[in-house]
Length: 348
Image (cartoon, rainbow, N blue to C red; front, side, top):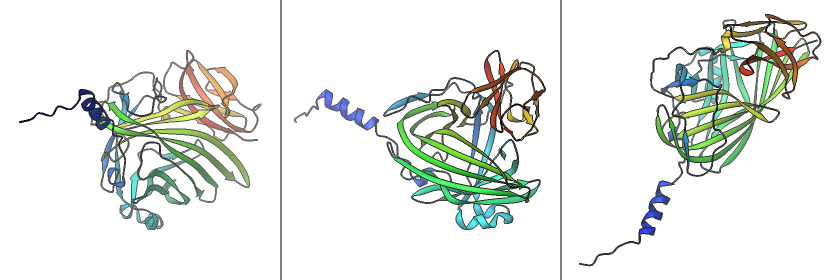
């Protein structure tokens, strides 16, 4: 009997090629009606490597610690409140969102994000919720294409979308989004939930919001990036890091990942959205600052370009009458460390 021995270098090369096969995401790999996921949210104030990407990358986020956990439910669109029925015609599923859809001028509660899930695209088609306990809905003028299938390494796609809300005739809110999706990496990722073969999708968002009241329009534009690590049959990203871009500098604003149920231990010196309030907003002459905690030493106000406009020692009330009309960021600092920030609108 003859023996055939393959060259060692051939075996190693073949195994390497096999092990490096990139993941491709199809519609059957993503969320569907009836699914639910435990999502942990980590402290965004930290050091996160969002720069490293490319082919056959190993990402290690195993040291993430949850600040809180939520269970996110996805339902068939027709299982939502009947007052949202106009969105049923353009949507298959809806996400029962745990956070309010809010700016510093209004808040929509009990939010559902509506999506159309098809073989070629996963796109957002509408938003619904309640304002002052009254149901309101908005159908997108053009859909926001969240995923364009197949999601494969080096694919690029883009979309422009928009929607608007009328708040009981008191004022209106309009948003326009320009999204560019770039599948810029693949490899393996480790989180507290496990290790997964993934592709990384970077979504660059340019957003323009306009609030209109009594014929006066207040525009606000900003840029943000979403970094999503997607694995086959996992439904939603195993990790998503969201950033805001100001003057070319990215600041991490949210870190969320799939997880198992855990006991959340208390973490000191972290301010949640509800613990930091700026009001009235919009404001004319003065704003009030409310926060929970005793470690804030300084307040800084920045414009939308990232330029520092004012610095104050901590105070519950600030005089802003000398600021020009526009949009600003109010940031809380403790010993030069950013703790939290809020958007503030100064009107004439």
